[in-house]
Length: 231
Image 1 (spheres, helix red, strand yellow):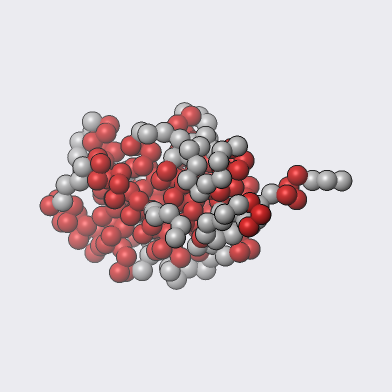
Image 2: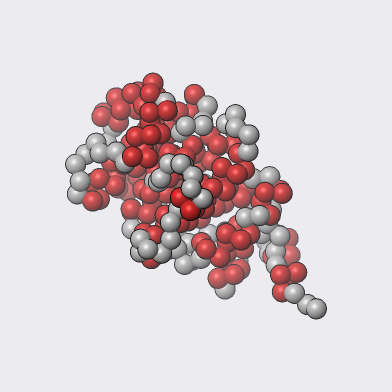
């Protein structure tokens, strides 16, 4: 019996000219969404797509094959609301900060504060507020947290600068920090990060009752939220 899944592109690293050569996570999303073959399809928020590409490229072959089931959930999660960027950045930074090597902690802590500041600004809330998840993450790295607070008091970022630079940098820093962390299974943490970021975006775009972060469904205590294209 013919099975259409037999003809699906196989997930692998990097860009691919066409489905016969394989697909990255977002190329497969473009394929399933009926869009032109691309790793930057219109069906997904650009920063969420960047995270998916980074997770795809930094996950081992065996673990990457298991990401296929997440692809349909990323289709249709598109919005120009800057809160989406801030939540993705915050999710990434708070997930990576407790496990990242010391030399990456300051940059990640600054990313946490930048995302929180942008969310406070967009929500009309007082500057300096921190979510419970951010507080937990920062408490894991007190020295870096204090340095980040001193730095952030002197640095101001525009909404344009946050979207173009700060948020993508937070995503890339987080993925690299997880990949290089001294933890047992970085692939599992990368997958959880992508699952939770997708769930965050779904709740923000489709409504809070649409879903919960995957880590909450599993009963995890993982922190709640907040890249360059393939070469």
